[in-house]
Length: 532
Image 1: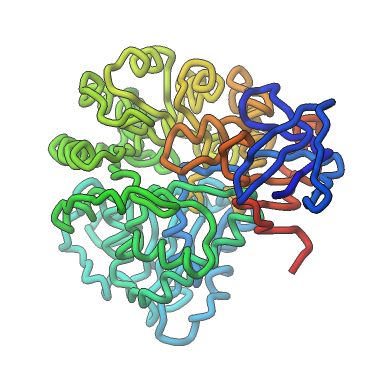
Image 2 (image 1 turned 135 degrees about the horizontal axis):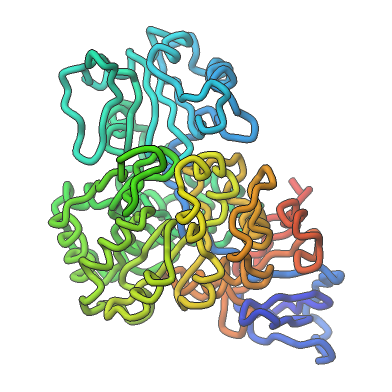
C-alpha cells in the first residue's frame, strides 16, 4: 500500500477531472482524492510526495510497431530532421556496422519529399556504397523502399519478374529495374531474403524495447503488424519474461494468417498482457508516395493511388475475425479506401460488444459525411488517426493533397467531438520523424495544428491539451483490449507518469519538449530520468 500525494493528477476521466492524491494497493488504484480531501496514511504506509508535479495516466499508443522496431536494431536510422538529402542518406548508410563484410546493410526512415535532389535512392545510388553487399533502405512510410542490385539478385528479382499483387517494382523506360520497391509486397519480396534471427534473439530484441516505451510514458501498445516476426505471440510472451513490461495487443497481418491455414484462436491466445487482438488488412497505400486510394485524382495527375486488397480477401479476413472474436484493423488512408470499407461492412452486424469490431486506421481524408456514415452504420467502428503525419510529412501532403482535401485531412477535433471510439497514435517507426512516438510531439501538433516548419495544418481541427491527452488515455482504451489502463481511477492499474512540467499551462509551442520524469507500471517504478 502506497499513497501518492501533492500532485496535479489528471485522472483521464474527463477534460477537467483532476485530483491531488491517490492510494495504490498491490499495483491497483483503490482511491483517488480531490484537492481539500485529506490523504491519511497509516504510520507504516509509504508516502510518495509528487512535489506539485503533473501526473497523467500511463499513455497508450494503439497503432505502433514494436515487432518491426525489434527487427531494426541493426538498421541505420535515416529519419528527419537529421537526414534531409539523398547525399546525407548515402553518407549515413556508409556508417553501417556491416559495411565491408558480407552482411546486409539496412536503413529506415528516409523522406525523399524533403530531399533537395527531389527524389529518393535508386539501386545505382546504393551501389555507390557497395556492389557486393545487399542493401535495403525503407522509406519513412514503411510502404516503400529501395534496394541495390545485389539485394535484388539475392531476392531473385529480375527485369522479367512480374509485379507483386498490389505493389510494383520501379522500372526504367526500357524495363530495367530501378531498385525502387513501391508498396509493401514489393518491399517484403526483398526483405524476405534477409536472414531471420533465432527465436531467442528475437525475444531479447523485443525485451530491449521496455526502456524505449517506459521513458516515453507508454504503458500499453497495439502492434499493428506483429507478423513482422515469426510466431509473434510466443515471442512477445517470452519478451515479457525477459523484462518487457508494456502491455501489447497484437494484430496479425492477413497474408500471414491465410498462409498459416486460418487456425482458430483459443481463449488463452486472446487474453493476458500479451494477446492476439485482431487481424490487419491493407486497403490502400500511403499519401506520401501517392498510393493512398482516393476519390479525386492526385494534383497534376490522373492517378487515384492503389487499391491493394481484393474484396474476397477482405471478407475472408472479416469472417476469420468474427469466428475468433477479435477485431479487424483496416489500413485505409484515402477517402475511396475508407468509403469502400463502409460499403463492404457498414450494414453488417458487429460481433464484439466491449470494443469496435472494425478499426479504421490512419483515416486521413474524413469528411463530415463520412463521420455521419460511421455513426449511422450497423457495424461498430473505431477510428485511429494521427497528427504526427501532417506535422512531420507536411512537404508530402502539401504536394499530394488539393486545397479541398487538406481541409478534411486528419480532422482530430471532429473525431473527438463526434466519434466515441477514437484515438491518436504514432505508427512508429513508419513515420518521418526521429522521435515519432514521443506522445507530446503529437499532442503539440494536435493543439497548435502546425507542422515542424510552422506551416498551418488545419487550425479548425485543433483540440485542447486535455482533449489530446484523452485521445492517448481514456479514449484510446476503447480501441484495443489493453486491460485496465489509461485512467487513474479505483480498480485501474497503477500505471502512470510524472512529467517535468505542467503540460496544461506551458506555451503550446513548447509542449513537444515535455519529458517524462517517472513511469510507474502496476505500482512499480519502471523508469526514472537520470537514474541508471
